Image (cartoon, rainbow, N blue to C red; front, side, top):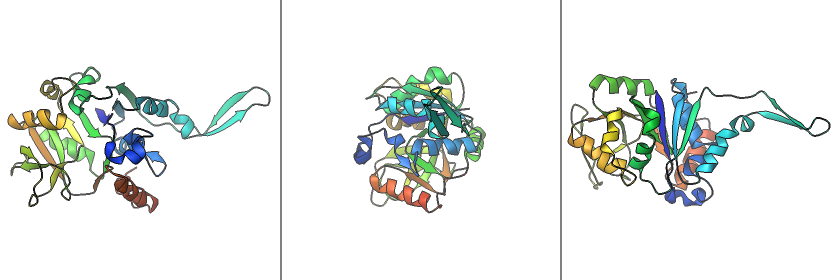
Length: 257
C-alpha cells in the first residue's frame, strides 16, 4: 500500500527554518522530520512513498538522490585511480516517488496531482510535519472494518486548531473553528483513503481540509480513528525544539524502529 506525504507547503509559521529548506526537511536529531515519518511507516511494513513536493522541491529530490552517501562512510581516493569507495552502504527498503505538485497548489490539488501514481487502490496519507506513536496496522484494520471512503486519525490536543465533531459511532459529523469551550479533537493526519476521495477534489485550488473533507462528511463517508497516545506537529520553532529535546533524551515516543 502506498503512503502519500504532503511536503509542498511554504511553512510560513516556522519561517526561521523554512526560508532555507522545505519544512519536511527541517532536522530532528540530525535527520529530516520527513525521514522520521517514513521510518514510522516502514516499521509497519509500508515502504512505498509518494511525496507531494512543491516549495524548494529540488532539495527533497537531491536528499534522496544522495541518500546512501549521507548514510555511509566514504573514501575519496585521489592518489591513483581517482575513485570513490562507499563503505557499509546503508539502504532502506523504500521506493520513493517525488512529485513536483506546484508551488502554490492547495492540499487537495496536490493530492489530485498524484492520482495517476495511486490508481484504483486504497492508500495512506499524512502531513510531512507531524510524528506520533500510532499503531498504523490497527489504523488500517479500523478503516477496513467500517467500509467508508476515508479515515482520519483524531487527536486530542490543546486548542490551536479547528475541531471535529464525532458521533458515538466514530462518524465525523462536521468541522468548525475552535471555541474556548470546545473539546480539542483535531485532524492529526495519518489517514487511510479510498480512491473515490479523488472525486471530491476539483483541482489545484481545492483545500483538502475544507471542501474535500466536508464533502465526505456531508455524504457520511468519513470516519475517525481515535488516538490517545503521543502526537506532535512541528508547526513552530518551539515545536521543533521540543521534538529535538525528546530525541536527544532518547524519549521520542514515535521512534518505533
